[in-house]
Length: 83
Image (tube, rainbow, N blue to C red; front, side, top):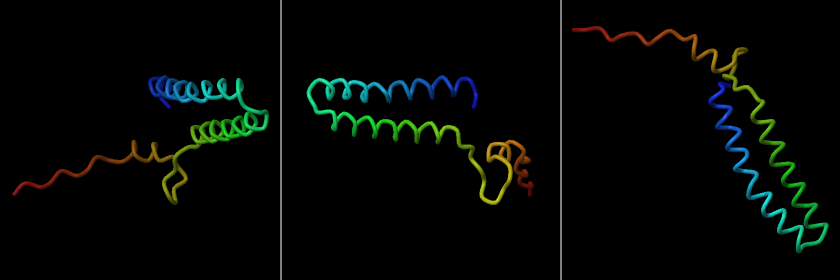
């Protein structure tokens, strides 16, 4: 992943955390421990899935190389012949 992409990914994750943190704060003020625990489990599952998804490398079906490597190594399309 390129550095510029990492910056945008980190920003997107930070912006995704904000609503969960705000809701968790409000839940902690007024709800029971069970509700807070269920909310925390949902957050852990969501962010765990996000982190695992970011670590997964895209693969082409049937290939042993990464999809990005395969795309970058392809030869340019042939030029149409003139008539």
